[in-house]
Image 1 (cartoon, rainbow, N blue to C red):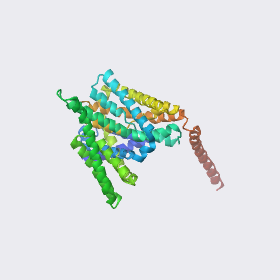
Image 2: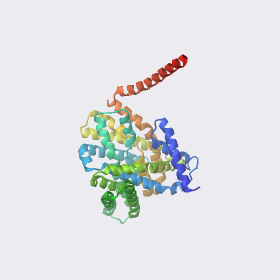
Image 3: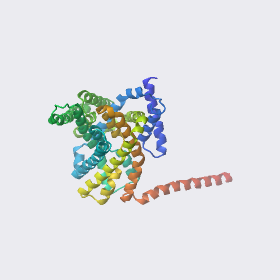
Image 4: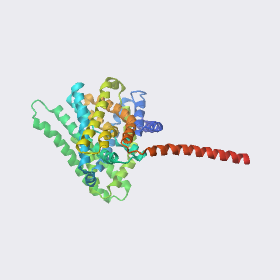
Amino acid sequence: MNTLLYISIVMISGLLVAKLASYAKLPDVTGYLVAGLIIGPGISKLIPQNVVSDMGIISEAALGIIAFSIGSEFSFKHIKKLGSNIISLTVIQALGAYIAVALPMILIFGRSVSFGLLMAAIAVATAPAATVMVVKQYKAKGPLVNVLLPLVAIDDAIGIIIFGITATTVQSLMHSGGGSSLLASIALPIWEILLAVLIGLASGMLLSLTLPRARDDEKRLVMILAIILLDVALANLCNVSSLLLCMTTGAVITNMMKKSEKIFALVDRFSPPIYVAFFTISGASLDIEILKKVGLIGIAYVIFRSAGKICGAYFGAKALRMPETIQKYLGITLLPQAGVAIGLSIVAQNVLPEYGAAIRTIVLGATFIYELVGPVLAKIALLKAGEIDQGEIQDKSEKKLKIGSNKEKRQIVKGKMEKTV
């Protein structure tokens, strides 16, 4: 079949299953992943494995756009408003998840240090969309929400940095021979991170200087996408993290341009088709046979990551003397994991090819679980923290009853009018 036809099947199936998932109040990303699983080589084989591999370019472009958008959270003004406590808490809970996953993978399951560190780095990432949706739906307010919203905004950025450091460290460990010095193995990851940041700074400055000269939004969008794709290409050429590079480009834009929010809004308008294709292709990449083999370790990943997030948030909030509700319930709201984690698993596949399929399958399986239970747990946490008004839930049910009773009244009036006529 033609490649364009395959891409069309991927996007249409993703949208259809996401629509069905919405009736069960599940996030769209879950629908995309399920659609990919159904049409992929694991079940129906509608999309063969070689075609899934050929669509890797879409995944690379999507990762660049995601990282560029995350860069918008690194506004110096925004970081100052957050205060040092929020940033400290973000780092502490991230390290909690990192340690909680790395140690069991290496010590209990006997996996290599490289495998354990990469899984730990992926465990740091959080998907804020599901939690934020619950906050908005129930109009939650209070100390927990005040900490939660800014924290999830920068958590993925912190996760990308930690993953970048880990990935370059793993690569240096794998390629260092017996005669290589310890200094060289430490210096290489630092150099690769600095190189990614330097290239990102250069492309960001170039973009911020040229964008104001563009006459309309269409030309601006073309310029932005061209730079993002150039960033990804340069990252591959220089063997550095494309996520870190593109994120740096986005950070430069948000700090150098006065109306940077309009720039990111342009990208947001263009990106949905790419995201649909990206997540659906990710679902198609799920290897069910490997899922059987890594079932126990996959369950362990979910358990240990959850424990790390909850304990990290608890001890971090306690050390920073934050309110008790934040100490108890913040970690539960940080469990969802989706887009960035899936993206990191793709990068991990390139860093550690022999474990790439297993890493990606574990992350995709965990994403299914987290996306299903994450919003429910977030609602429970906010309720227990006393930040969802019970009247708000009752009001919603009462509105449904009123709508039903109003329909009945209209039907009675309509019946009487028909009899009169």
